[in-house]
Image (cartoon, rainbow, N blue to C red; front, side):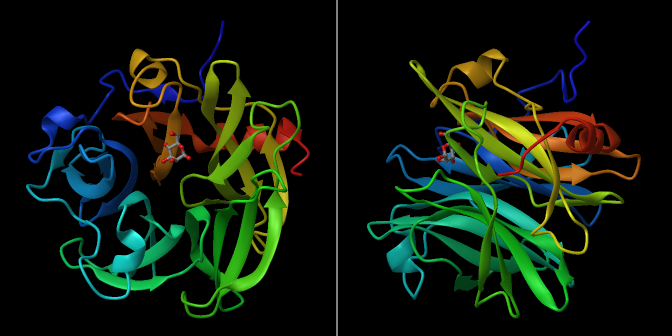
Length: 311
Ligand code: BMA
């Protein structure tokens, strides 16, 4: 009998546009963290213009979410970010480090897509800190730790020459990033052969940093977005210990197979719990939010015992 590594919550989808108190077309690709005794979700929504904004929802248990009355982050009307957020803000990721939440998100404009970093301590005020990439980058996740005094992030530059791969970069101050290295590229004729991107900010385990990423395969019927996992070395996350040969989640439920973009499961966040499980949150078909649970030890074992070459 087949045993699913990610156990889908029976109440999926957990958040849809009908539950949002302002007009939106979708609710997807959300970051989730635990803050002050509740789960806080930052979710992306398309507007009828086709551009995206970021909303906030709260939950006592990680499954039942209520959206705040107003959006959390909308394109900057003026100042240094305005020119780069003109077409919308997308796909937030949140990392807790040194007493504050670091929020990375995609900033779209006529100048391409860049990643912006904003900070908050309480999810009521927000400080836009810096645009931390040039165009075209997406999927920046910051590690919740420093390494020899440096911050580390995984990211996914866009290239017409090489397959779209996962890179690592380092920073002394969260503003200036460099010493970049490619850490993981797609494997030809594999479920993630077309492109890869970091998903949820990495989770610390005794065996290494667990990174839940998305991988894309192109078919005659369009692209399929699935989730996979990789384990990075604890002391030096530029080194990959293992990458699961198989995906952990693929579009199967009707709201993952059909929607704004068909055949997509896409994660921007996961919450590790003290009982050894992890709640993984994903957008279904760029339209609704879903959640499932997995045992962290199962995910680590897949990376260690069922690994394929990282590059
Ligand atoms: C990616 C991003 C994601 C989206 C996915 C599937 O390139 O735009 O936000 O979920 O495509 O459409």
